View 1 (cartoon, rainbow, N blue to C red):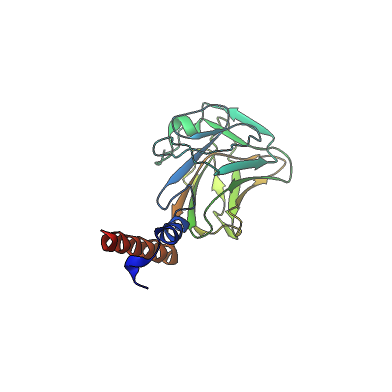
View 2 (view 1 turned 120 degrees about the vertical axis):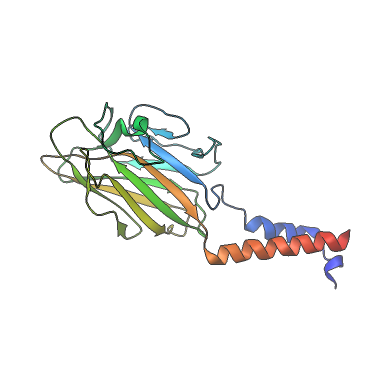
Length: 219
């Protein structure tokens, strides 16, 4: 049997396996915790679940890529105080936040429907609040942590974790911790970006080449 005589459907199925995830490599979703919606950021209210998150770049909805939030005690708005604003975060995103007061306290948000074949980078911004307290929190996922983040015009307001993997079922759970008797544990925003794995790039490239060769032969 030659490549020319192969049926098209198996090749299309192989190609489709490389495109299963709604969140593709290089794409990002932005989560804006608090009480105000802004731009293409997904507005996340108090323990709010979102069925179809939208892309940060253009606002297109991602079917099946969802958010589940558990354990929040508040979702409030600013204005915040003026720490340096680092892209892709904006002043509007930093001017509201969500978190917990309880001592000791933590809360979680889980991204669902992700592609297990990809890894993910997570950026977070600790919540800014207009008072004299510097809240110190940590954000962790997949066994990694940002370490301690400050939240009052602090130099270490932003955290970054690289190479996160799902649980094998499309889920990535993120924990925000650090609430004590004198401070709350809250963040203003988070950005998740899909990063290609070498194996998935090879699969996509191989499937694309095979499909292209098949179409040329048939022509």
